[in-house]
Length: 328
Picture 1 (cartoon, helix red, strand yellow):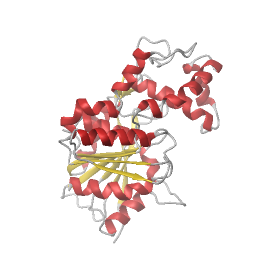
Picture 2: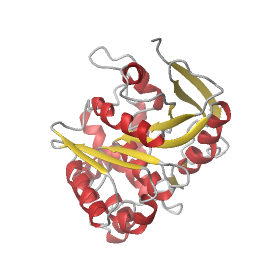
Picture 3: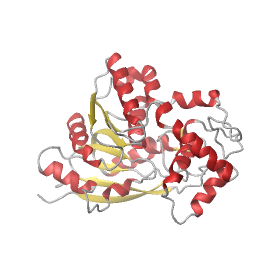
Picture 4: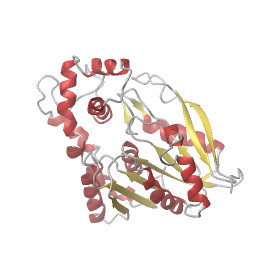
């Protein structure tokens, strides 16, 4: 069987025009079309959203030690493990390192961009029956939050190692970020310095960029002097700011379950997995999420596996066939 095809669609967003970070409005969407794609037929679509510091096209890049997404999708379809499916991969990268796929006055209206622009654009060109959403890390977070907020848009979701139980996955970064902010005279100047560096992948940069990015999504404040962001700690003393942290916690999936349980029950699939050795402590959030979903009798698939947060694209071999079945 011949393989599928990856089509690059370039889209100029109206929603993102004038975004506060001055990020590009013209973006590529990489769309996988299954083998023997027939434009007269309707196919399920699984929209992929990626983790922090990633873009949609990156998963289609050649991986000499593994398997790129196109090769994986071709294999799953060829071997009969998954039905034919359209897989659009979305670009929501921002100057603060990535996206949590929610609207924010500090980054832009990326929830609206995804649902009101990307989905209609893709489906004006390709015939879709039902649609789901999936991703890893921030993409996993975005998938479950999108499912909670918008069951009219998404029929199924897969959350791989998504951010949850914020007390465990974020707060260990705060002292490192605070020290970097003090060294560079604040978060805004640190971010300017970061984008001037020839190597932006140094390990010590990650917790700082992540803290800025999460604050930009969970606690934006247009009146803040720090480019429209409130931080859950005082930038001078490090003193905890409980009123800001409370805003973060409202976006924590383990706390959102209570508010959005009826919407989650409407979905055809809620899939969650996480590695037991996840270095960002996300296994604990996954376990709490699994427990809360069970207590509220929300049908879901939950799996743990013996691995870390990194290089776990092989887990898509489990979730994508389940998404295909749920959307078929």
